[in-house]
Image 1 (tube, rainbow, N blue to C red):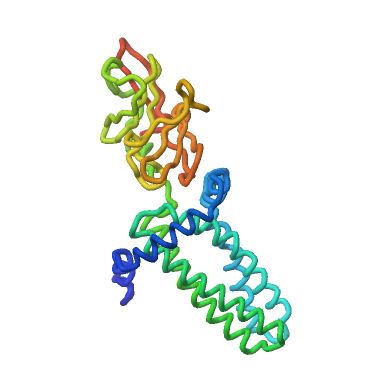
Image 2: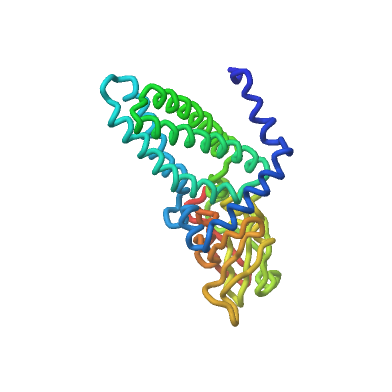
Length: 295
């Protein structure tokens, strides 16, 4: 089945580099406004293990769709007005989480995300004007403004779906590792070949791995960052050493997510999914690895 006519505009939008100056300005403003790192982690959804924005957006969209239904029923002006106001209140945390995620995306995703944001900002403006008209008793124009806002919010939702599913923004980019890696213990390398204290890369069964050796202990994680597929071995080691605070971690070279080497857990976002961590053992000074539940 062919796609609907006109939808190839999305492909052109992804590569519309004329948006880049506006994207760069907006991203710089957002990054300055996000505040301390703990707040950014909350907005990304690190404590939840899931992005906050898709969850938070249910409040304004649900309220506004419900208001549209009530607008078609006589005598429901007051509950419809309450729902429009509820949607406006819910739009604030949704937008904050969305901008936090957007500021750490790739170029093509940033362009689509900027238009997604613009559509939603316009929708919110129409709903704010609708609420003002409804409070003045001008329900006819208030309804018209709401329906216009709903169309714009729908367009923004389509763009958000494109970001999430076609462009994989917010997806876990290591989900496939357990399905691709063979079950059981696999040879990695002789211990003496692994550089002490450095971040290195090895490939086993076609899967790139991040390797960190300290003494006879070897930590092995999937090398592909769960956020947007950066090669973690090109990042930097943080914590764990003399004069460093906290456990040994790796910081992503692209968007600065931080993962604990001994567990694979997310320490700081924007990543929200842990890195697959491999069990290791020494057999005659040969390092072997195993990924639980692989195969």
